[in-house]
Image 1 (tube, rainbow, N blue to C red):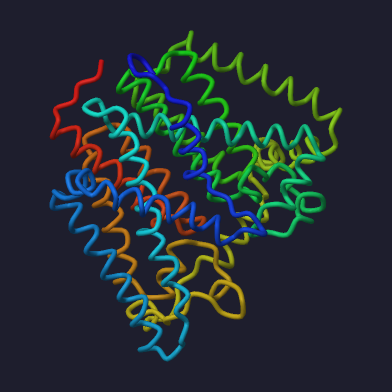
Image 2 (cartoon, rainbow, N blue to C red; image 1 turned 45 degrees about the horizontal axis):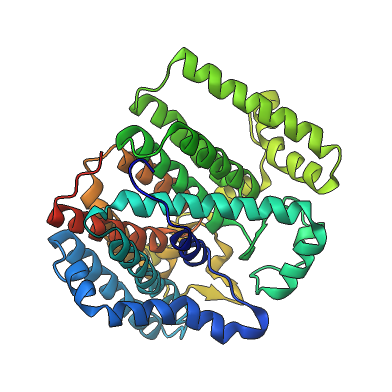
Length: 410
């Protein structure tokens, strides 16, 4: 960052807490490190914590109040519907667990940077952590014995066989283990943050922007095609929004993209796993050019089977179910459909209102349009509102701190 020193130990802290992992034979210790250390840090620095989150603004208070209301609703709805499905409590309380981690990271920044602490520092370290996570994927792909060893060490939400036999899964690995939808979401957010840091705040240089940007985009290619689509749309909007559509700029990006794909095309002939990933990543786009349709089974299944209009009663009061027969209720991956099915339109509206309230501090920035675009598209694919709320709230708390201390970074 320009005029601000990057601390390696803060980078390491962000790497773990943005992309935490659980060791198989030490799961309790892993959870203590993930949640216990931030809790102890925030409590022991109670004076700082009181100053940091003590004077919340109206929109932030309303956001937290809505999340508390939704937490209460997640307990009440299954009882009223007699489903005894209280699994949604874990989803909604994720907001508070993640908020604890982000507040801890914010306070680490404040303790080190003091009066220079600004939201942009958090975004910068978020992007650096994402860069290193994608780099870990490249390392695992290059060293199969290391990949096998690490997969045996960490708990993963998907079975190991997916990496060797599942089409499109060979590159979905990082130090977290399986790396999928949540990881491509963070890569997309990293791209949004980078546009903001570079074009709006001018606090990272050309090389830093290019390096972090390229790796975030590669992460999208590794962890989920939905992230590629979201990032491409955000890049297009940002190019118009920040007025960066220039012939010289386009020529540089085209040259860089051609060089990257030429290198990938050469490497995939040397590595069967890389070739499999290449086919998975490029096939929908080739289909779009040749047939006018993505012909993507995942997208077709989402649009045809997972997004539908439920019964009127379900729309009004939900069904009080989130999980059924060890899968999501009615087998839908769509985020807004899961909410409607659980607590109907009223609960869904409250959840999205809380999400918008968490973003209110940044509504006057161009970045917010890209954030909202990302949120809408990812929420169609899967639930992400409880990822956005704690992140945006934490950034807004840092914005409060910046306004209070009248920070100006050039």
